[in-house]
Image 1 (tube, rainbow, N blue to C red):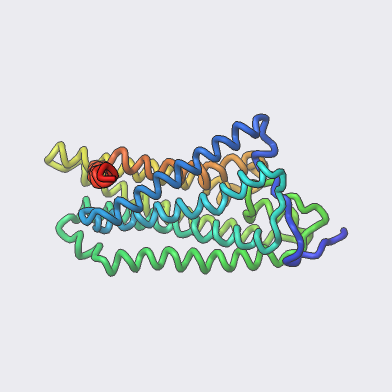
Image 2: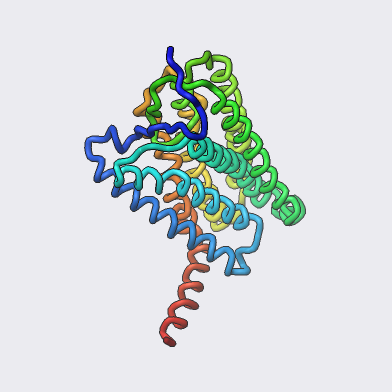
Length: 315
């Protein structure tokens, strides 16, 4: 089989969900609206947590990190997909493809680990409230964040380098919205079975182990909440935890479909749909889920709005 030169001068062609959709213009408009929503909502959440000193606690530091990861993740995927569709140019260079894969894997992996750390934070806050500032003191909080970013970056470097070293066949069409490991491996001319097995094992490790930790944390939280004497305390704990569990379900559902379910069980069209869900839809909805159901955040947003409006009225 003829091989093409996999160098920085070689281009791939991204043939994603916008090209296979029956209503691509409508879908492009939806993607644009979701991206704008993600930018505004995550940007506001980053701003309000930074500006309000009352939110300078571990729970909101972790939420700040989640908003940053979501904002960056959707920015890696959505603008290029929309601009490519509008310009009718779906090409991406070899180096651009490698960079996009690295960034997506780094941000996705970091979010996997961060969500587990957020579950631990809620477990300590609800089950061990008197020791909360000991178990979640700033040094431990920043250490957890640093570990998430570092492990995700190292893992992404390994995946990206190993994936891009394969020789690719004459066809350069990636049947996907962006450069991701499973669809890219389908273009490889070499035997990728062992590497696909490694990706599967690492996917299970990176996704299911944090998910197991999250489920264990919330099982313990549930037992503690059910024994709380205060009805108001139970309600507040359940509202906070339900927001986090909703985010966890949306994120892990799509990511597990791509990296845990064997490739023989899903089609390229299904891959596109689930990838869109966890890279475009989830980043737009996460801040809304947290802010609309959190009195501290909504209160801080009102205070921030009250500061901005009088300042504008003076001009």
